[in-house]
Image (cartoon, helix red, strand yellow):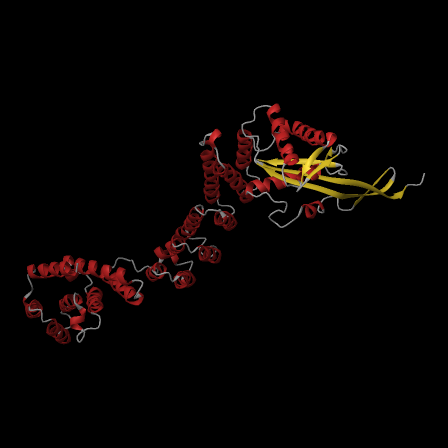
Amino acid sequence: MKKFLATCLVCLIGLHCFPQKMSKLYATYNKQDYAKCIQQCNAALKKKPEMLEAYYVKAIAYFEMAQSPSNYKEISKNPLLDCLSNLSILSSKDEDREILDEHNDTLLIIKQFAEARAQKIKTANTSEAQAINQRLSSIFRTKKADGLEYARLDAEAGRYDKCYAKVEKLYARSSAESAGGSENYTALTQGAILLAENWMFSDLFTLIRNYKVKFAGNYGISEGFKKALLISVDTARTDDDKTLFYDFSKKGLELYPEDKGIYSHIEKRWIELINSQASAYRATASHERTWKDSVLLRNAYRYLALAQEVFPNNRKFQDIEVRLNREFHTIPLDYEKDLFRKYALEAVNTWRTKGCECDTSEIVYVAPVPTIEWDTTLERLANEHAKEMFFENHSEDVNINGETPWDRINKTQYKGVTYENENGLNFVQAMKMAFCVGYGQSFNGVSDTEEMKAVIDTVVTHWITEKRSQNCMKVMTPDVTHMALGMYGDKWVFWAITKYDILLRQKKK
């Protein structure tokens, strides 16, 4: 590469028709006596400062040395920077760019070489890379020196703290009133985007939060903030557990609560995510589905739940939930709920009335026990726990908040609630409790009520016949009085308690 560039340069210079005044300088250059050439250029400029082309000859002499800098250590510590410095001076003095334009082909070769050098050393020697880029910007007046060039180099080198410090300083020092006419205007529209593209998300949200109001009146800068925000949201969408996607979505809507464009963009991304999981599950053959396939459906519902937290009361997500429930039969449909309760009670009470053998660690015969009744409070609790198990893919008694079944019961009216009826003041309390969880069966593919009843019977029978388990004894607990069966997808919860009305005060007759 070096040989190619040097050869190109020599060819270009060799073909140039030099002015008479400069012939001496060029002659020395062509003899490859670069040290003497530079001395002659300095002497010429001292005697005649308007001889601007001498800066150009000095520059190309330094550039030749830059091909093999180790051979010229006594002349220049960094010949490439010296080359660019002389061209930068020439650029500032050559107002009409007559000389620069005349040597444009040569300058482009120098530019190509310098950019390659800066890219190569950007991590190992950032200060030199920055100096090269700064001088190139000055020479070619590309406006690349937009206030972000050094921040970009820091980001590329992994110095994210320094990158953010430079970006933040740009917004802090810029006046909101004059930003539109500032030489750093482009940088102000791109600074936030630079952070987003380099995954500096925490810094990005801090920047937007601190400067959104300040630049609210400037369309370009405001749009830069919004674009960066949406880049972060779209990037986070690839996160496996969607935690960042959820967090960034909420932060975006909090920062721009009235912005319809941001609302619509984030809403669309969540809908796409939910639908993609449902479509992937739909594409699997029902008779060949494995637990890995079921994860797809579980994810669709989990993402739906997260979306409903991000967009409370959004009708689109409510409609999606109805559609998914209907298609995949994840929960009993509205018209099935009464039958579900009936079949669940029948399944449990059938075993309780006839008695059974329970395999705990040994076979224990349990005599028939009284039937029990349905309880709507337990139904709500059981369904909530089944839903959590489905979303989080666990089958534990304790929920993700670390609450036991008793902890959750104690949050209901069954924790010492008093009420007054015709007999006096009474105290209601759950005195005993039985709790079972299970998984594997679902209503997916169930087309009629008989099939639904069969699934419920299978679930309850599994708890009764399960080997080396306490579930059978829980279903057959003699003195429980009320129960509920909750389900979501392939997760099931049996919950039973004993309810006592304790008379505290008898009314006087």
